Image (spheres, rainbow, N blue to C red):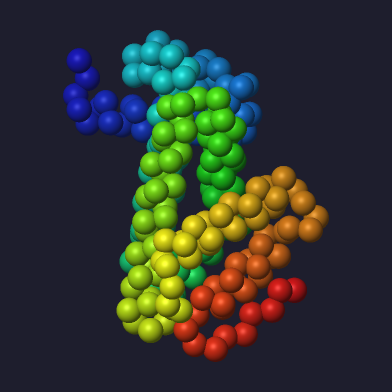
Length: 204
């Protein structure tokens, strides 16, 4: 049996490759052989860790979420007050580079499959619960600091997450009316309305 460190390394290698393939080709077109080739492993090695394609993709969807959350937590640690953390969090959400856009494409595949897969619906529910908790906690801290308007922090977090999700799907789909810069302007406008201090935010 492989050492625990080898197991963790191999799983990471396989799941990273699976996310890349899902992002490029979608869930339906994914083949375990494609993931094995991308990971530079044998198909047998992939099946050692994940018995079926479904097991592999479910784990990849969760891996995509975990990596996304870890990246954002690192970003949050660099900002001194809650309003700056919230702005940095939202900015990191925008699909403005290939790594973030790829993660968004995996998210989109998760949503599509969750329509027909109860296990993925449960995963999606848990993931969104964690996203909302992170954002709601930033909002709570901002309200305590007097930097974010008072109100139901869970409701505000839901509004923010829902808006970003909708805008990102349009941007990823290549909408001429929702470019990344336009998306940023809309997000800036909402953040300005949440600020407890006067702020200028025009939607251009």
